[in-house]
Length: 568
Image (cartoon, rainbow, N blue to C red):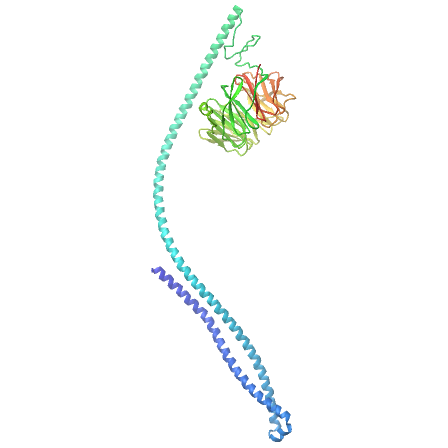
């Protein structure tokens, strides 16, 4: 047994002796008082017995005196004074007996109360002795536990020492890896800068080649026109990709002079539920649709029919908008589940036929449904949400790099370049943003909620759909002024995100929008007159998309129907 255990045992023993002494002193006084009272009680009992005997004797004599007074007088020689003294002694003895009986009752009561107190103290002493035994047992148990804890503490200290050594080693490894990471990051930035510079050079080369090709074609056209004036022969311009001929052989020097679609050539079910978005690839080889079935489906037009190429899955709610980055082969889809997702289409020909494709990026951060998303420059995306914010995302960092606070729910947005954004909101305002600054540069107030925005191919005009007054407005972006208004009896947007679009030709010959009654209205952009009202849908038309060359028009409604329109 150790020194600490002996000391603890002696301390406990001294405490017990001290407590026993304190409690015994209290009982000693009690026992002493009880003994004195018992002795007094016995003496009083003895005196009472003597007095009782004297009382009985005197009572007997008194009775005899009352029975035979003559005989007593004759036989007794006691004088009257003696008899009177005896009677007085008798009365006095009776009074003493009564007093002694009263004292006896009081003393008996005290004895009973003391006996009860003594019993209570004995019970209390017994319970405390039991507690002492329990405490001793607990003390032994605590000693055992203390010993076990000491052993565990020693083991833990040894483990902590090992962990400290490992921590030092890990910090050294981390510092080495951090240095490597910084070096690799610097090399990556250099490679990225070189890649962007190379891409810009390639773009400049392509632009120069396009300009040279356009100049060559224009020179060729001039030569053919001069030859036609000389030879009086018809010039066939159908071989030129930047001009198209008509039946009257009038020549228009625009890249596209699109025909006015007038007939539905194909109807099909593209998505389950409403179809909120449709978008053509820049090449015109295929288009994408998205809606209530939480999928983006890819379609290819062959022989006048739409063939399903595949589906892009991963969204948890309805698809709200679609945008395609043809240079990086990325497709972005915003959703009612507060997110924007991106899919890579680099090898869609291999994967789309075999099954659905999951998103490569999921951009989360909004707190309400995201109604619109567009690519912004190189590897960036901007999204507009009902949480009254616009967010700019860097796809290389996979993170939000800028949040613009609009103060109103955003229904649609368009991008002008890598820095400029135009957004339409429920508070009847169109806001012009530069992502390098937080507040909008300019605001335009219109007469109702903005449901849709579209920018012309020459980037000079903006088309806005206004739900409350059932009309479209064309805005000159250079002057920030409304230049034309398009309306008719048939036009009435069915949703807060119903879309309207420009035709893809460079002079935006037509504007087009869908109505709540299923009509598709096409206006002349210059005269503002209705050129055509197409009626084939049985539900509200939400989204539409023109072929990049203007060959056809795809419209989608709220009951999963899509229709391809063409000129015939």
